[in-house]
Length: 510
Image (cartoon, rainbow, N blue to C red; front, side, top):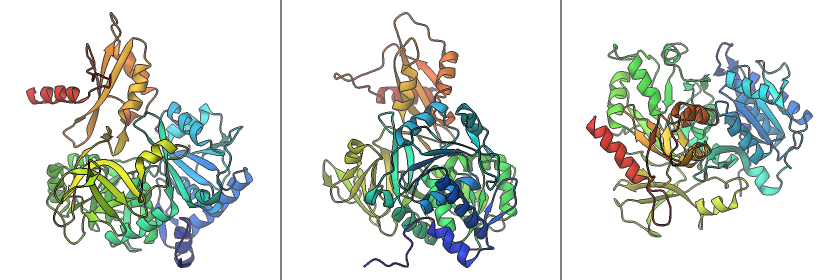
């Protein structure tokens, strides 16, 4: 029998904090006074009423185009309170990408965090969006489409907490249906793994439109009744200030954030952080050299974990009491089961194979995409992550590769076929192939090979301008490489390994 005292919807987390500790600070936003849980919950109720007044119904989608700010959080919980589905997307996506997602999810309303984001303001202007009501803190905007999508109904409408869009290997965006149950379960797991209390202060520059920022940063922090230093973008000087005032106790980020911190403090033996007690990175593989430098500079272990968009939070986290000196991502968190498979069967301990996961955070499917859902969600409740790894004798997971041909850039997934589709649309391009190349900072560079039409000399500066207008900055190629013939198999499928090998040879000769 279900325990009715346990929360069932994500808005119940801030509601509980507002009831028990209304004066406790939940947010330290940019350029405004700290916000307490009581005020956050009051704004959530106002936003719910405003959404309902604008015609948003239970089961409809609300698209939030923005960068981190209180409005994004308020609207997330207001949608939950109303029963609508929030769809938070990074405002730094191009207008084409924004419109593609909107076409797919058919929102009843689009909200733009123009008060904090110039990118959101440009999108709002392009759609002739209206000014928002005064209870929002900044000069934000909203747009109501002429033909909003029909509300979802039944059990699925009640279970979905949010849609998180991630571009698929087909080049088309996929809306991951993240459940209330999954986010609530992981909020408890993540909070416990960090031993968070109401006295903790964490840093939130990771986008709330990303599962890392949403689950690991926001939901875990609010579950503990702790506070977030909320920032639209990562700035080294701001992090260094925040370490002393208000005094961060938890610092989480993708590896490139730590690379920038180390670079900016190269003249310091140790970073001043009197309250810092927990440092964590995720979103990319662990670089042991970076790990060592971070640990020396902060005087603390650098913890790690493994998660994907299709799971509401991390599935593996290193043990706070037993820091690792290798690249292991820890053991499975509470409620998670793992099965390493090869050729349809479970492999022996220590053997590599495809990582399959079962647990409460598994997505409910890809929205309006039953074909891709069937490929990912397998019989028995298993999720095929598309990643490759192995377990050691202690049950610690080591990642060895990705079967999905994705590139990890600044903690974001870049799906080559999406970028290739834009390049291939440029006049004079016959075909292209996009691959990743490891950079010195632990990131991956996006490299685009292209085969021009016979006799065509492609203007690469103009090509870059074309691509830049169509994709987000983190998806843009670092360089273009002209090639006489893109290698293919007998069936015509592009072979990317020879291209990666060419890049490795170039790097070795430098």
